[in-house]
Amino acid sequence: MAAIVPCHYCASAATARLAKPYTFSSRFRYPLSLGDAGPRSFSTRCSYQDPQPTEFQNKHNGWPFSLKHCAISIALAVGLVTGVPPLGWPTNAHATSPVLPDLSVLISGPPIKDPGALLRYALPIDNKAIREVQKPLEDITDSLKVAGVRALDSVERNVRQASRAFKQGKTLIVSGLAESKKEHGVELLNKLEAGMDELELIVQDRNRDAVAPKQKELLQYVGGVEEDMVDGFPYEVPEEYGNMPLLKGRAAVDMKVKVKDNPNLEECVFHIVLDGYNAPVTAGNFLDLVERHFYDGMEIQRADGFVVQTGDPEGPAEGFIDPSTEKTRTIPLEIMVVGEKAPVYGATLEEFENNSASSQVFWLLKESELTPSNANILDGRYAVFGYVTENEDYLADLKVGDVIESIQVVSGLDNLVNPSYKIAG
Image: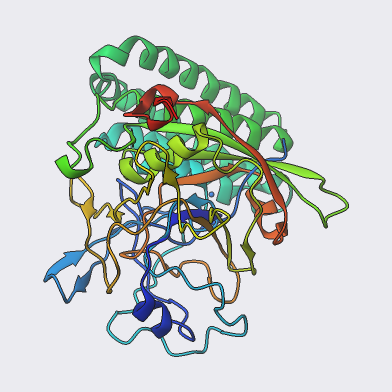
């Protein structure tokens, strides 16, 4: 997976981390804003245990950070993230280096690697009945890791468990739908029920190859039902940020990149889902810049097997210069803490300059020696605001100098509030 994150300047913290890979982790629970272990995933147009949260203490502020479990390889975040490793970070740093001294290492449970699962669990809902349908459908991914048709025995148990949970919990699921979205939600539930019956027949016919596509379809229905449970935007953004571009909900963009050095991949389209429920300011800033075509034609500026980064404009400016103000537009560090109903602004696990993020973004790749699966290096430092959900595996192929041909919004633009790109100039 690849987490896209905003950058905040923090010279002292960045220097302290030069030879220290992050090895602490926290487990995911909804809602989600930070990155943890997971797969990279995007498409060339071009998976889950029930985790519990852990906590580590912010010694400066005296309150606990119980942070969620995001997919770093598929997560996505924009701007200048707190303490983003500088471009000169040595490439020979390795996992045997000392870890951060004041943080407990809490590695536990398999990481959530599927971006779709992360996005589903990141929704601000609390409906146990739909989650009990969701989980066995997600567990099919692990069942399919068994070789041959023997995997279908486990898949059959998964499907039966999901079907049983659906029948027992349907009333509670329907009651959890937002009134304004109930008709659409019920329509999706009917498709989900029929699809599970179809999946049972696929398993009975021992058609292993047809399982994964049908699973993906069913989980899309589940995600749609869960989104239909969200009634409006769940909290008020602080007044000081209220006039900035805000993404109040979800949106999706396609990023087309011209790949120079891969003879088998001339261009790749990465599908990115932006999560405004957990980072409305960060996601809104990015979406607004996308609509301004800020990133179109920009080169990849860093690609070292650890992160892929871009967003630094040509010239002396360190971020996006808003033509309406002729000043750099900056955004705050925005972190959603487990158990809280709204993000925390301007607080982190280390020193940094607040309101210093602007247009620089990076995707944090997973499974390198610096980012082993299940080792969270984003919690408390970075505002993850989305995920690459198609063709994420190709992120690792990007090189410095590859060109972002375009980023286009494909859905959710109506969730963008205060769009500055509509202002003349």
